[in-house]
Image (cartoon, rainbow, N blue to C red; front, side):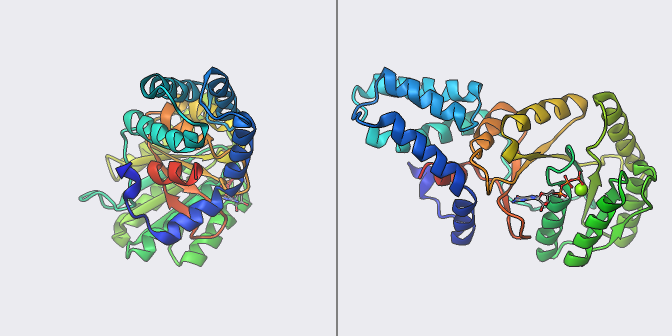
Length: 317
Ligand SMILES: Nc1nc2c(ncn2[C@@H]2O[C@H](COP(=O)(O)OP(=O)(O)OP(=O)(O)O)[C@@H](O)[C@H]2O)c(=O)[nH]1
Ligand SMILES: [Mg+2]
């Protein structure tokens, strides 16, 4: 399939392959059991495949779509060998994702004429918001962009300290206040400073530890509103960070956050060290919001721009 003939950066690919190791190993183990002693893809193999996909955290709705596509293919091609199943899965899933997830996000170039470009990062606690911001700051900076960080997670002192560590590590300015101060006030200061400094991009860290949807919505709305006093279109992007290692919980979080606030992009972290990497396929299919980044490790270089073809290619090989 021509999609896969594209040459991806070798280093990125190796990093992705390594990050997905556990998910792949677990998937292949289940797959080999499902097709053991079978040469032909029949009803029974399809049933087993369905179970394999669901237990690989692809999610029920997306699994059904994939199985339907493969059934059609079996009907068309008459004979499908189980030895071809991986290749076919790869093709059908890639085709499915290109149909349903049109929101393409292929690099981290910033749109013209939106300076500073304000990215507000949201998500429940511990998913990797601060780390993702640090990794992003590094990527933007290494592309010659001026970055400003805003410590609007004022919930606990450590949250501010962690962002400070990333600011030091990446050598970018951070705007912060003391713990417990109003997150909206920090966001306001950050945007003002960014304009003064002529920054290209602003990354706002927020707290996820809000007790209910109403509070969350109120707080995020307030942060947005004060930023708009300086930049009417801010935030240009609301990025929801999801912890891929929580599997189906990540789906739930995506549902809750998208109901509480407008989310424009997704980042799925911690895909290394988990067998639940299939969740990215489901999330990418189910939400009409592009998955922009994936986290495949704790190092600064372990945040990748998500490319569904690369991902599927790595996963099923
Ligand atoms: N293995 C791995 N660990 C990650 C990844 N992304 C983040 N982490 C780790 O996850 C933990 C939590 O990350 P944080 O960035 O502090 O998460 P947060 O959402 O800011 O958390 P709070 O500030 O508590 O709300 C840290 O130990 C990170 O190093 C990833 O892609 N892979
Ligand atoms: Mg944090």
